[in-house]
Length: 287
Image 1 (cartoon, helix red, strand yellow):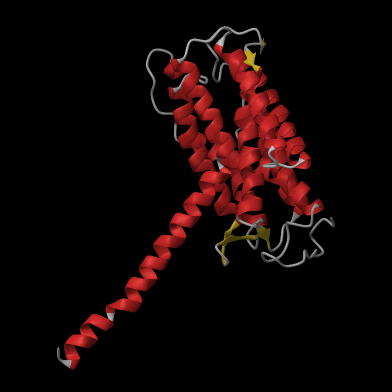
Image 2 (cartoon, rainbow, N blue to C red; image 1 turned 30 degrees about the vertical axis):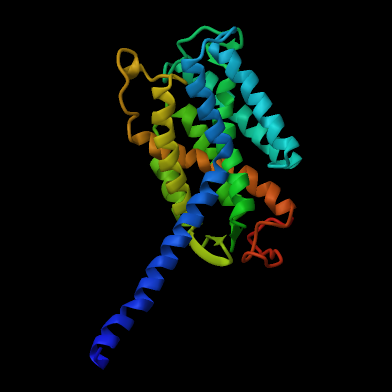
């Protein structure tokens, strides 16, 4: 083989190695994401099985018992710490409060009968919100998440405003886009660093909220298909959830993130680069 022929074979090898390495990293990233979604995946397994298997009690009641057992199992298996379970339970209560209001307003409904329904809301529904908190807790651990800076006061205020807007927009102008713009502004310099197999990557924190919100919207479509709840336009035949819910989930993620971040700050696993000691700047809350 001539020298030119050998060079033609050798030259593509570095590019091939880079592509192969990128694909391997992508697979590692996907595997970590799957592990972060264990609680949410288990909830969906429960939804799917409960639609196909005859149960001795109403379906929503069985899902409540299943969710409680799942939470206990995650704690006993040390998949989540006591602090994480507490903050996830807090988000569960936040979600239940929203459910009670939204069902009364006719935003969506739970058509099946159950003993554990309060004002039309089955208590198992809070586990949908708990799954979001669980995902963020797992992501902090498995991706070794770190935030370079976080303006606590404005970010927490916007998170509370986003939650309040879910209630007030029924009576007052809807401010979700104003609040979303506020998040982009106050988190402009905030970057989240995550690690995949000793390699660190970074992305804007506000973008991570948007991406998580998208996947929650996809999950919501699957959940309504499985009869977890239904929107008014899904009463006769199932159809996709309106894409506007994507933005609603992205805003709700902000509240979940603030709750989990408070725990991670206390643990010293919030600021700085992966593996680095935490640092606190003037606009950050001390641990």
